[in-house]
Image 1: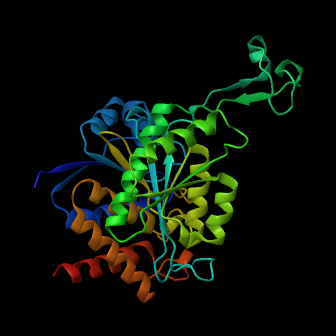
Image 2 (image 1 turned 45 degrees about the vertical axis):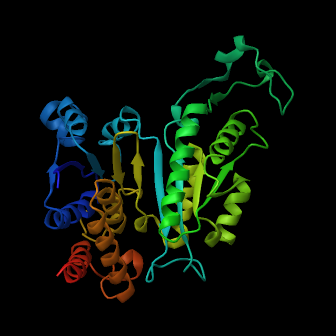
Length: 360
């Protein structure tokens, strides 16, 4: 098998405590991967005078994927490069309940959905400013029925939805729904927008997704107003399979979906582009527990499983997910956030034992 090269960026605070034992397991299970640890964040600043030196950028460009820990800021320039520099346009956020997760739902057993968040556009383009700088544009509020020049001083942010950006994430989402159907899922795609209030921008996202839907007659498709989708996500989460959303809604609702199964510590994440992908635990850096060796590495391991599948190590990815599921089902070795008293290291050791048992 062709060798693969993976960049590892550990992140800050407690994140490295989840990343290091996870990578140690992967090194043993998938010897065909070469792991690269470029200087990023505080280490990059110390060695090269930059939080994201050229050496780190070159390492990413020469790799097949990146496994990224959570960042509290110092490593964020690398994250921005992975996102916008490598044009990873589809943020894929699975939310799947496994027996043993501490879900707040009374009956979470059927929660198995994926949110695909458009990752590059919408409000996250970072185009903001003072309202008075727009006065020459003679803009008119459609809802307030007043010219912008009549408003009190304040600030604005631009929402940008492009046809090309929407089409590629919509097509990615339909292909994902098709792959999930082959694995026994319904083959259903739901689009969520606020097209009733934003008919021009969100309306475009809806129109383009509906146009792409015509190329996938085998996939059941519908579109919901995003606030109705949020309600149904909680009230009837088992009805969803794949959900595609513009950037802002996807950011918010993917965290909400993780809450359905028990928290962000249980949810993996991958960001995919045309020729590159990176994988990260979407939870925070947990500075309050840094140095205690109790951070839950489940999100890191599930993100790593997504990476293994992307790199064509599907059998190892499946065994990793199965090993995790058995550890939770047994419930003997769990971290404090899931009601246990085990350390991060002890949890990873339990996953390793289950993985090795099925591989022997």
